[in-house]
Image (cartoon, rainbow, N blue to C red; front, side, top):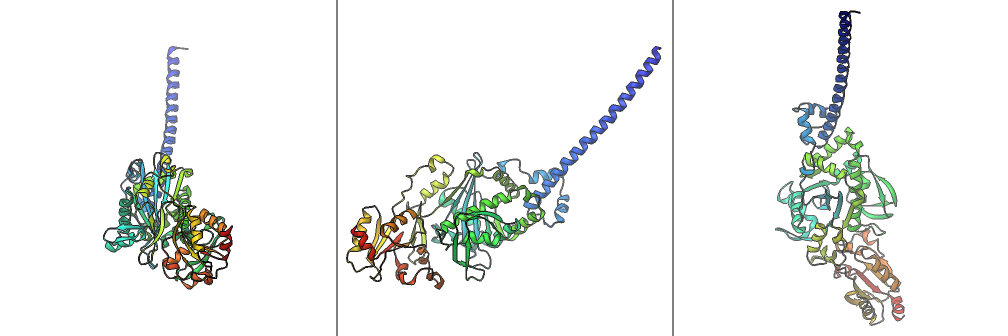
Length: 496
């Protein structure tokens, strides 16, 4: 074969090879195009979802969210607008962000501007730990231009001074009180609380103890009976609100302290539901969030901060959530104002110890200490309910020897008590001491009596305690933990 034919065949083969490579490259380019197009679509979808949740300037409906997004400048602009590049977008100090959560009754609710719930939630970016610290509504604190008031009045004073400023006013004053920065606040009312839980399909909550509350206020401001059964329960918004607000339950659940622990359980359960992937891809839930935000929530969080906080809490270690409630078992003791209102004061005499606890909540060495707060033995009032003269003094001396504090010794309203009665005036916060005293005197225990010191008890409330053993001077007692009325059986015990 001649060289000419050989070269011709070679050129033809090279030409076919080049065409084949061009065709292959075109196929490869089309594959790349579809990959890039798919990724762009996914990113666009995520952006639309996040924008429709968190952008207050976007008017949402099931059909209008996409149209609104399309009017914006570009996909890249939307990406940088709604997707945070890191936790640097969040205000924080020492790798920690503090968020104040407030719950209020809201419109058409008695005392709707008073804070029913006050809770500080902190997140440690370094350790991924979360701390939830509940502050009781009856804590007595100084408020500028208003003297000493219960802490739950802060929101009301702030709203009275400037409409819409209640949550910010509360955050500012709590920040100063405990010497800790509060970076963000969020206040929700009862209707918003119920609505958002319903729109998320309810919550699964583990009820620690079965309890019954016969005095829960209904929508007509009358009393209704509610109850909860131990174990896993599914709550709609109404049931979750009842569980969070119940104050007069039996079985150790009849106090603000027990209530705040239940509120923390609700928040943890909602956090898991809110941050789930199924929430982010459900348009109805997204719309519900927006509708709730419009009329029921007050916050200083902007869009990027919300999204960044979501990312941070999504990565939180749920096994490291610390729950703390300030109550009479640790830092506080119950007291009364001159007008007879029930309040809580720090045992240390000021707020320094409470401030240190909040500031060091993530420091295990500090929290592990047991000597920075002195937990006193219970304070007792002892009344003689028998005709045995000197019995109260004798019993008081025995209890003094056990380091109990005797606040007052006197005679009871009558002297024919057959059996010793102990009135629990500290909301079951000193259960071990109560169990000891009950066994020592073989006594009848009447729980949760201190709630009657707030105001005149209603007929329904009085009905929860046998009338024949209800002390006439219960509202005039000095601050104490237990009132012991000695019965005839105490004479036998004191002689043993």
